[in-house]
Image (cartoon, rainbow, N blue to C red; front, side, top):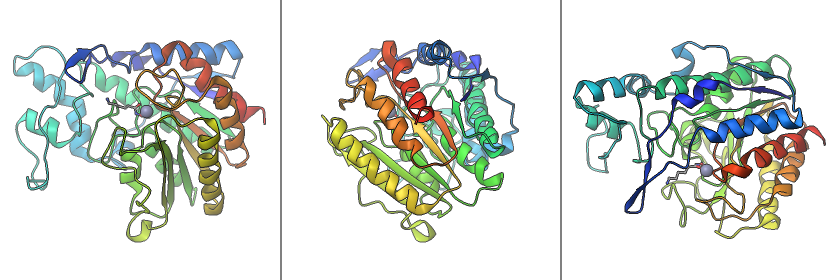
Length: 343
Ligand code: 6XA
Ligand code: ZN
């Protein structure tokens, strides 16, 4: 399996995030991608190559131009205002406030185009964000060209990013960009299977009214877990998209048998949809030792997960999402890929 990777991921480094009342070191850090890459090499997964550079038009097929340009210029504007450090949003548009008017002020715009305060923009973040999107687009292009499976070693991750909002460590939705690229290259239908611990609210929102992309999410119950405001079982899609969104929320403390049953149900939905290709939003924060999560999967379950996904018999783009048990992230992520390869 080819891995697509860009060393530019390291240009995004969050200075830290709020955890309850404390400002703590960021969980989403460059070491994550480096350790996954090291494991890819250690097991000899296959060739590692850099991404092609795609034009901004590939990004605005999914994202609002206003979001893309904010991500590109926010830090420059921040500095021009005499501020140091990274640009953090701190105020948001609640119901009853103007959703039809983009604020002129930078703080207003940061809030308008985001939904949390854990996703700061540094002077060099854009280069990493763009490289991560290019990694996903390149991987999708390889699958369009006939590769059976490709690993997009994306960082920063993407599944929380919506068409016009960033948050949850995510800026652009790499999985959505990959799915759109597969469609643009000729696929009639693409399924996105999101196995990250957290609900991929951005991915769901992007495709909620569409029937050419089936979105299946297996994740912690939003009544207990971030992102709290989307990801419930009663969200089937809307309009033409009705019946093309599937949420399979599970409670804190979920172990492999219940997780596996949810995956089997999700796989059944994907099979019934008969997609031409599958994009897997591959988060490994379902691992029992993950510092911010509450599921209890073990190393070998990631191998089994890969094997079950292989049973779909569809070309697959694996797009890296979350996972914060850093010492073990390489083994867990690559176990899914070897499990897929070996079955
Ligand atoms: C914010 C938690 C962000 C979750 C990030 C993640 N405190 N998403 O792993 O998949
Ligand atoms: Zn996650």
